[in-house]
Image (cartoon, rainbow, N blue to C red; front, side, top):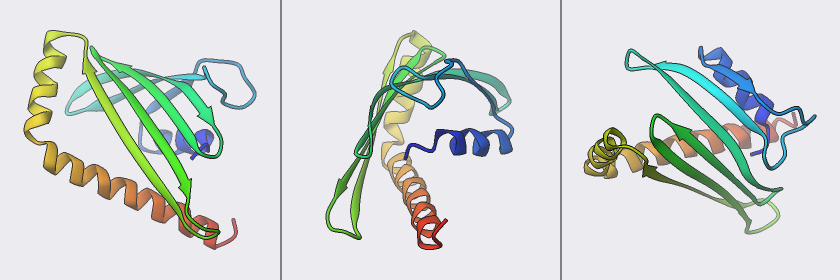
Length: 136
């Protein structure tokens, strides 16, 4: 969950421009990134900041993009030696009228978006499990 360099490489492979802003040798609370990408034909820019980094159990990220602020929280709860529960939450808050309208439309599609988000998290967790199973 804290392989930020790996996440940067994945984004770069997908054509996303990722620029780390701070000079810390490894990401710490306060580390931040500027991210630029095209989505649905438009250039998008966002800034992400690590607001809490409590390894290995909790990460919290603040993201600001086009009048929409978000807080992503990732919590890991060990259940046994070989099992860990992951909880991922995302809270969005509009800072402009257009962002408020976007958020309203997202609320209408909440069930399908939640299902897709859950599937992406599951895919990510399975990739992490496979990576560790291979002993890498």
